[in-house]
Length: 194
Image: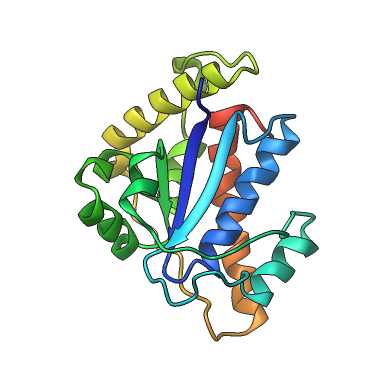
């Protein structure tokens, strides 16, 4: 059984999407699970920074919060990445539109990360398939959540995640705070992490 795959997308894949990816991976690990249960990866709508490490302030925000920032390399978004992912989390609506233009099948599974965080925070998980610690249960639960969240997206403001590129550490701290606030309830729904 393949894992539930989450793709995180921003512009250069060095600031926002690496933090988003690693926060979710952190919560998955906190639930005693690994990439064989829920696989996180990320990409950028631009290939300008391909192969680069995440931006130093993004790395510092993760490290200061006890989140693993090692072993990262930026890569560009592709149809292969969108088509093989069960859920796509974007920083802005422009990134969402880019992913949907690239892959027409991506529309129903692509969300602004902050918007999906709000949906997840209000979600009654009793209506979802139960978790038993297996990859199969996470896949079924995740697919059911994404389908239901798609029907609810119009009820929630499409909050963007601002680009901190070339700005100071305080901006990265604000973005990291917003990502933690969004990713935590998503992880709670997907894997039961608290």
